[in-house]
Length: 405
Ligand SMILES: NC(=O)c1ccc[n+]([C@@H]2O[C@H](COP(=O)([O-])OP(=O)(O)OC[C@H]3O[C@@H](n4cnc5c(N)ncnc54)[C@H](O)[C@@H]3O)[C@@H](O)[C@H]2O)c1
Ligand SMILES: [Zn+2]
Image (cartoon, rainbow, N blue to C red; front, side):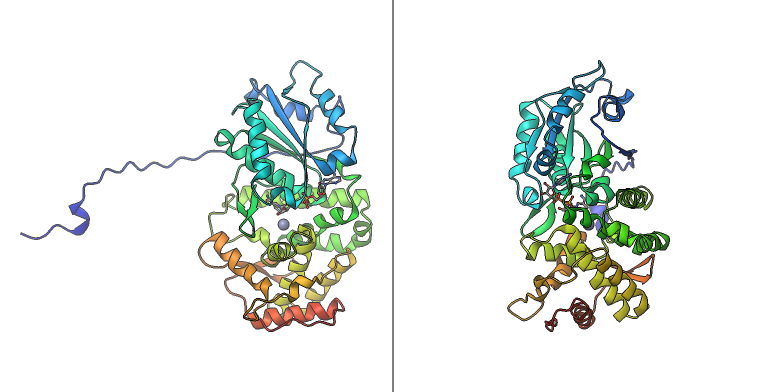
């Protein structure tokens, strides 16, 4: 008698079902969200599908609270008026903002504890108001308490309104890596309030411009030309130009998330992260002295110059990109670009390994094949990176040239 085939030796019962869950992603733009007459927040929180949503925990980035001293009181008043209003479980909770807030578990535990103490359930909500870091840490805490309580984001920086706050990701840093711990958790809604940007320090306003240049370069040449035309107004943070940039940038991001077919990044590409492999590493190497937007500007400049070195992009176009970043006010050199490991390799190159590990599978980096058109590549030539760093060092007037990687 013949031996049964290997698979036939084992009994198997398989119940194989496919199911899908529909998400809705709503991004609002408004001004003065907490004016008593502004209905949007109340409408978001008490929609027909959330008729029993009664409890609301509000967290407030300390930077925002410090810039707008009457905001806490205005929030409390806003949610105390009208019958169909969610009930604040306590006054807005002010938490330290910035990268330090997401550098470890401490603030996640604080928010979990608040959710527990105030009995925020899966039909209640957490409203986070702050910069990208605050939204990342509070969003992660909300996504993990009770396996996910509803949350609404109110981004308060240009970068967060244009980019980080309008997406579906959250996270905290761990083991020296950005966003090592985190999840994909689409918020109930994102509400961008332009009035929150008035007191933002110039360096924080600038950060968002880098993400706009990034998405314009990989997706939308016309947007790149608009940014170039308006560079002086944008460098001066002229509100009309800035708000138009935020709306266009946010729409491109959201469009990508909802229509790319991979909103939870299961594939091995992260096309929106052009320039980010170096940026994330530089942020870590600087101990987060370097802000995300400033680091992204350097990462974009590096990968653009690399694209030209690799023969993908015309050198004149690469020059335009770097020139635009300079006109927007970005310093395009930082001492962390010169740090080396004990074997002499440039430390920033470890960002490529982090990127590969974070995605799983093989490395995929987006480069430029034209202004407005990204292209995925699966390896980067260390010699060309060194040359691109040399170009950058030369342009930025640095006397120091990059070491051999
Ligand atoms: N989740 C994502 O998809 C995603 C995408 C891109 C970036 N990010 C993350 O976003 C973070 C960067 O966010 P950011 O650029 O918004 O900076 P940030 O959150 O680090 O805030 C910078 C500083 O500005 C202060 N601040 C915030 N709003 C203010 C206001 N209106 N007025 C005065 N001060 C204010 C904060 O307190 C902080 O000190 C990074 O951690 C980055 O990794 C996340
Ligand atoms: Zn970014």
